[in-house]
Image (cartoon, one colour):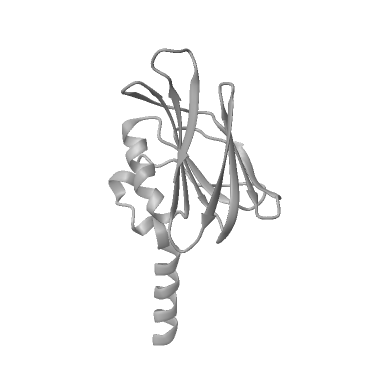
Length: 156
């Protein structure tokens, strides 16, 4: 009987997993995690300051974090509704969907991937390696100061 109680306690503890690391104050503003048709767990959001803080806190529990912003001089603007396509090393699409805020988190197995996104007239592709450490990629569209042109860059 004692072993059964210990086993149940361990199972309950494991099931709390990542959500236990996120304080309740953040969880109240955290959008629900979803599962893509390909079986990839993901979370996207951050439209309000409270939701952005919650998603940034949850990012510690996901191996991949994508951030979408536009820079116009010193001003930064969060971008929403960006298409995201993630391909594995063989070129197979493992995720295809859209963001619902400037943050996108995905629970991908370790490996090499290519992330493609699009905003306005610009498409950007970035190679990403998911490993023991988290990967964070910022898709940062920069408007040039004296021209009506946009340049893209990514940092990770």
